[in-house]
Image (tube, rainbow over the protein chains, first blue to last red):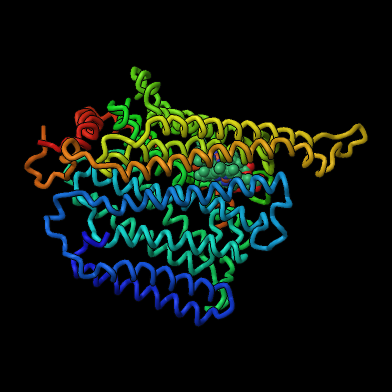
Length: 547
Length: 56
Ligand code: HEM
Ligand code: HEM
């Protein structure tokens, strides 16, 4: 980790960590017994831990070889490990909250383990911890390989990676203490939000600077998706988190947005978080790792450009479909609904592009579980976007809103699309990165694949069933015009589905653990010496072939 | 003229539509511009030959 840094860079690392520790100290001093104070201590511990790592090899030999002649893979490796760690944590929380819905006693009567606090630890753990680290790691890999240039910084990749993880830790520990802004997917309070702005802007600058020094003249389409992901998440995050803290010594803050505008800003954020965090970046993975794994170029490059701009521009307007039948002006709802339906076109263009890439290589899909992960991910992407466009239609939404149908839709996207494409990409990436012939065990990838697929199907079918039953029970009237079922009746009807969902989630979690083991054994295996040794960036422009 | 809700609606319904449509056309033209074809063809193939073998 430290071996690739020059002594000047090591000094800068120490300075940065000391500054962060000072910030932690002032948070602790100002916050005292407020949760802010606890977070100050956590910040100090975090930077202290990293400081120890840097200082303990501070006098290790400086990098000798010309660093620019190789890709910068260390941050990617750590990113993958962190991502898998968060995956297990976040999904464990998912299984726990799923079980709490079936058996409420599993909250054990403590405040920190109540449903309301554990639920955001699940969503943050999987979306930001697992998904975010996977996006950072793969984006670092893709941008270097497609630009054929090394990352434009030695320290900044580490800053981005660890800074982002510090944000995730502050978020999750905050929920346990009861801190929340009460905005879904944007729960962390103002100081964590400010910190994320610093980290994210650094990320964006690093990415742009790496692209700027590319040796390959054309910017491959996957980079566009990653750039959209980074840029738009920065904008969303800043606008949605404009808040005024109660005081410098308090974790609590109040948003500057009033009433229905707050709701609109939140769901403009929320839906574009789906679009640019859970979709655009993962499409970047799809457009790189799927062709590489299949060893076939993407079916239509033109289509990938069209769908990129389609997704980027349509998604921006779709957020209001989360606020159907609210105080939001009717035309804004209609606008969101219209754009959501139009979104189906670029979404299916991407899904179809991926599947058509595989057309003619189905034997590879049959034999290679890694490729199958990505193929099924593309199918679920198509499925969940179709479902989303359908649910965005106002009368349909009157049935689906507030029900488990939404949760089923979410996990068709999150498990079937986001998680599966990530696993497929990791199985492609890990052997290449650690210079191994292949993953430790192809059988275990196969096991993981079937666990993940079974888990997803059980989860999604359970929620579709329970969601539609719920929705119908809530709108069934008796002949006298009163509601036929009480809320509790609908709750009782959910019981078997909640058990099924917890079981499906458990299978999915076991699959993720199998994946961790497989990655671990791959890392421990002996490297191959010859075949991948040529994996280096092109140093001089003169050698660009075929120009 | 007052800047109110109706102004915004009128603006979105006219210029918003025009802007999106112009943008759409621009992207289509870019994607199908004949001289871009070679660039795209090369781009989609170039990611395949790299991870193991560098350019010679
Ligand atoms: C082990 C697998 C998983 C299980 C058992 C699980 C379980 C759950 C449960 C029980 C909820 C709360 C539903 C409710 O409030 O009624 C939930 C919400 C959510 N989960 Fe998961 N989850 C899993 C994996 C994932 C993954 C991998 C992701 C994302 C990549 C994810 C994203 C979400 C999101 C975004 C929500 C909020 C949905 C909403 O507000 O409508 N989950 N999950
Ligand atoms: C064309 C694409 C899509 C459209 C039009 C769409 C539309 C919708 C709609 C209408 C809702 C329900 C809103 C409500 O009733 O409250 C929803 C919820 C949700 N969707 Fe999608 N969806 C799409 C794709 C996806 C994908 C690919 C994912 C995940 C990877 C996803 C994740 C979510 C999440 C997390 C929520 C729950 C939000 C909440 O917490 O309430 N969506 N989507």
